[in-house]
Length: 469
Image 1 (tube, helix red, strand yellow):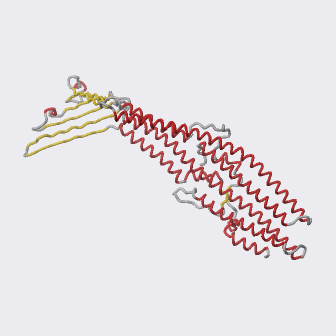
Image 2 (cartoon, rainbow, N blue to C red):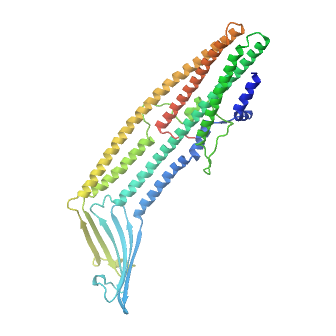
C-alpha cells in the first residue's frame, strides 16, 4: 500500500478535524471560559435567585412590624327597628419590645345596643398602649422571625458562593479533561506524521532494492496503529468538547456548542493559580476565614439559637397590659386625662408546660446536632486541604520527573534513528523506542491533568469565587 493511500484513509477518518485545522484555531482561554460560566450558567443564576428569595423572606418578616388599620362594622335592622349600628376602627403600630401603640374610634347606636358599647353620639376616641410584660417582652414570634430572616439572608450569601464555587469546580474539570484529550490528539498527530514519513522512506528503499520488501509491512502496521490511536483520541475529543459545552451559555439562556476549531490554552499551568484566584501563600490544613460552607453552618446555628430563645421564653406566662385614654375631642390634647380611660390585664399560663418544655428540649437537641455537624465538617475540610497539599507536592515532583523521562526517551529514539541511518539498527527497535516515548508523553500529559485536578480541588475546598468577569 502506497503512502498516498494512508493519507486518503487519514483524511476520511479525520475529515471534520482537518477541515477545522485549515482555519486558524481560536483559543478559548481558561479565564474567558470561567467568566462565561460564572455569568451565564443556569446554576450560577439560580444562586443569585437564592439571595433574592432571602431578601423577599426578610421583607415578609419586616411586615410583622407594619402599621395596621382594622375596621369592624356591624348593623342590624328588623321591621323598621334599628337593633344596632356598631363601628369600631383601630390603627395599630407594633414596635420591637412587645409594645403596641393604638388609636381607636368607636361610634355605636341602636335600640338594643349592649350598654357597655354606649358611647357619645359623635363617637369616642381612644389612644393608648398595649405591653407584653411576660413571654412577649424580650422576644416574640415577630422578633424571632425578623432575626431569623436576617440570618438567612446572610446564609443565602454563603450558600450562593458555595453553589457558584461548585459549578466553577465542575466547569474547571471539564476544561482540564478537554485539554488532556487535545494534548493526546496533538501527540498522536505528531507521531503519525513520523510514522508516515518513515514508511515513505522504507517503501522507497524497498522499491530500489536496498532493503527487503517485507520491511514495509512493519512500517505499515506502525502507521495503522497511529491512525487507530489518533481516531480514538478524535472521538474522545468530540466527547469532551460536548461535555464542555454543557457549561457554555449566553445571556438569553441559550446553550452554546463549542466549535471544532476552538482549542484550549495549552500553556495553562503557569496561569491556573491566577485564574482560580488561589492565594500565593497557603498554610496546609488551615481553613480560611469566612469559608462559605462553615459560615453557612454557623449562621444556621445562630438561627437555631434564636429559636431556642423563643422556646425558652414561652416558659414564661403571657401577661398583657393595656391602657387607653378616652376623649370625645381628639384634636384637643388637654382632653386626654387620667379620669377617662379604659384599661385591662390578660393573663395566661399552662399548668404543666409539657408542650413548651418539649419544644425547648427539641430546640436544644437541634443545636447540639448542628454543633456536631459543624465540628465534623470543619475537621473533614482540614483533612481534605492537607490531602490536596500532599497531592500538589507529589504531582510537582512527578511533573519534573516526567519531563526528564520524555527528554531521555527522545534522546534514545534519536540515537536509534541515527544508528539505523548507518545500518546498525532496525525498524523494530525504532518502533519500540518510539512506543516508549509515546507512553512517556501520555504519562506526562496524564500527570499534568492530575495536577490541574488537584488545583481545582484546592480551589473547591478553599471555597473561592474567582474574580473572572
